[in-house]
Image (cartoon, one colour):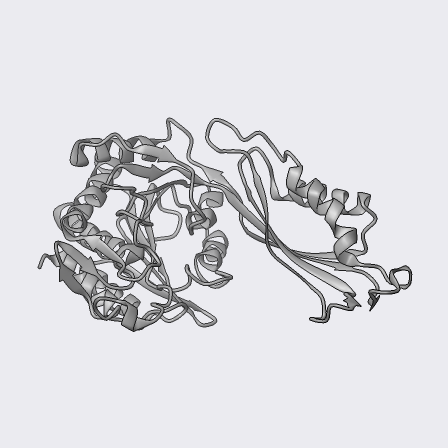
Length: 383
């Protein structure tokens, strides 16, 4: 197999289920160190992060800085007997490499490493700096000690990122047919509505929180939070879980818990959504508490951004495709890098099998991915 496939299979064999890294980052760090990269292992809590840079004097703040961003952790495989081949034993069948993380995103990580190795070998005195930032905590529920924490470290040390390419699987059917130029923000909350427990035969002696919350829920669900804009659809509100009751059919519950989520565009802010939600709940006279969790603000690399133009041109020239420029999908670690002032674009393999049984990546496309990443390096730093 090719160099990128060899590295991808080595990474897939490692059971790096969040937040375990299983040795992926030391393996990559050793490879890059041999080529003159300055490598730092940043461990916070149970999470390993790798920060490797090459060029100039490798001092924080030296610019311009082009960074490739990825993660070595994967989601659990689920029942292993449901897979055609063991999820952590990479297998090539019918031109595809199978294994947990093949597409999300050990294939991209391998491609980034190979592209950076080729770039610095061919252009040892390149302008600016290139960097690789990897974490073992992208798939987890909190992401507290991964790229979010590294971004805080960058602020404290004066590190400035100009451009960031995220290797998340972005393509729909073919490599290069879609790139992501932004992402919606994600704001969640746990809502508790308090009532008074009692017997269903004596409702006058109780207060049913389900009945009390129903009109407010209707108001929240029908609210037009914004109209979106040219780059984003309108903000959406969803209830993902609603729970109340003791399990008995003759007891009015004393409280209700709802899990809510906003996926919001750049037309709104988290602060505004919080304020408007609380105003609606207060207007309905509820006795409630809200615990908010901001997973990440929305971000956009606007048209005309240098990185966006270069990535589009690379897809056009090397893949023969005019990529769709999307802000759809969930969240990515790019949400922690964009607030540092960086242009962020996501480019990776087809995402059809991510998190699924028999996750896979097309071998031919995986072997082409380092060419795309290397071309981005050359066009951003050598032009």
